[in-house]
Image (cartoon, rainbow, N blue to C red):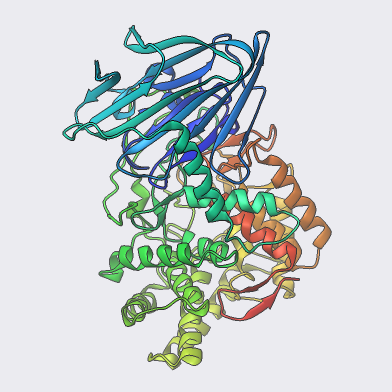
Length: 601
């Protein structure tokens, strides 16, 4: 069985990522890119789906592990009866090929070690042809070729490459796994020791630009490194997570592929990056956004591939049993074809935020915004699938209308503050009409709260964002009433559910339930702070920090009863929310998406 979700650490080279368990096993790796088929997929089945184990022969979890400072270089240590051994893991920033580097270091005594390499291409379905060539092992199947170079003897047994060796105090044994296209020549292997140093230097230099200086510096820096690791460097796009199909319900069917770029992440990502000094990354993300959405605004999608492609067909992989039996395992995401009205507002908000922060914008960007606004004017009153991608009937979701308002509001501010051309009087009229309708149809006066959609009896955690986007001020009694209603009706063990799936007769059209959504819980901390309950906000934030795993990572959700991580991991939405909430609770001066300088309460 795979490890617990919270037992995995992340490695990455800015084009793909690997997950390493406490047992020393790489159970997930897609090559050559985040959304490529996995060559190690034990995470979603068992060891026969592919993994790379490197650990003491006695087995068991590492006694301790850590990243080297802020770098994405992992050190796992085992104390055994024979001595102590350390395994150093990293993926150096991509050069000629994708490399996974592992160095075994003897700390004390003489420790028997075991390596178990089971390469299974195409998500565990294809066993490669393996041979020894020029002192290295070569594994080839279809479009993929993987090479393994090491100084210890390798043996083949039962479609698995193994090695058994001992490591003494002071001894270092390198392993380098290299991937390339099968029709290309064997790439040059990196020097393992130098690769570790280069990787550490890269991350130390990158995070050194961080401007956050507050009580949660370590957590913020680790979250930022994780966001950077989830960035596809060739395009600047940031994937939602490194994995697919990790369940939102144990044994349930709510299993989705998150290895793509969601547009609504733009505003949150830009806030996190701009607010901590990473202008180059914010600019690259903004430029990816403009390229991805270029074209007919009627065909705007909620997500795109890492290279901006639009077609992300969803299919299931029946040969994989799923994480702890949660099936089906999915690749691709059919939600890419949904109509989610809020995305128009999110894109307009994100581009406005970039302009307000001083990032250079071109006439093309404003032309794109004008086209998006034309579409939004004509379709803001259409029902949609909502930001949570419900697969039930389309509704008039309150959050979607609020974000439509936000998109028009940003356009008005742009014309007024930056002198760009646009029918500002008409935009102002439509904006005000949306505001009036939401307050009339999306607010339940008897309960004192906004609702998930017009006429709904349910709530939505996204309602916590109403004051964040400037729709109503923090001191409006409707805001405080909504915050209190979310605490009362959507919280379990203090953590926030996105919504109640069984509300209103089953809003999302799917069976089962899900865990608490971590980004929404960060939003609640923001809302508590914004409504003057600073102590409670900090207590909730500290609880969320305690939920991080031993190397500072968060997944998408948690099980409120056990605090186990659930959903895809590590989750960019959760890490973005951590950074943004830390900044607000620290009292950092920030520029809101409405373009006004605001001092956090």
